[in-house]
Amino acid sequence: MTDNFLSRAKTRFKFKSPWKKAKSWDSWVPGMAIMFLLFIIEIFIRDILAEREDGKLQRMMFSPMKTMDFILGRIISAWIMGIAVFAIMAVLGTVLFGISWGNYLYLFLFASVTCSWIAAFFALLNSFFKNRNQAGAFVAPIILVFSVFGGSVIQVDQMPGAVRWVSNVTLNHWFIQGIGKIRDGIFPTAPFAGLLLTALLLFTLAAVFLKKRITI
Image (tube, rainbow, N blue to C red; front, side, top):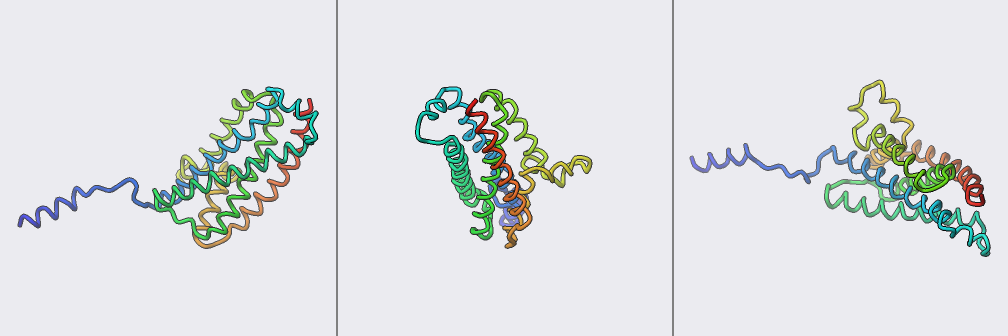
């Protein structure tokens, strides 16, 4: 009788660990990952404006390094930094939350094109700002809008239908959807192609406008 009572008590008051794998983690962890990538890569790209303010870029103008080489090097560095950060977050997601990422080759390719898009996007965006303080004031709200409406903070299916369409134009939504396909064993062809083509366009525009900003 005592054993039955203890068994019922354990069942009734059973503690559920918040770290136990749940389906919600599968979308929440990628959502947080893309939001962190936006902030981290943007800060790295914003150093271009900081170096311009400190006079380092002016000194580089007298070195053998060309302006375009500097811009390309900065964007590639931000891209590599983003991939490294995402790799760490992917490992933590697996260890702490039991996330299954699916095919790792698909994941690497998709994360790579995503980081290149972010680097090119913020390179272009920062070309319109005069200094890093101005850039920070404008960029942070943009990232928050991407994250809120893209599914990083609130799942898209929980949003009102009137604003749900906004998620379709956010990087966060495309990234989360792509990761979901990879987890199901499907390569995210449409998100990958869309991000790759727009990344190339953004990079081309960023190279032109950043060169003008740096040489002013």
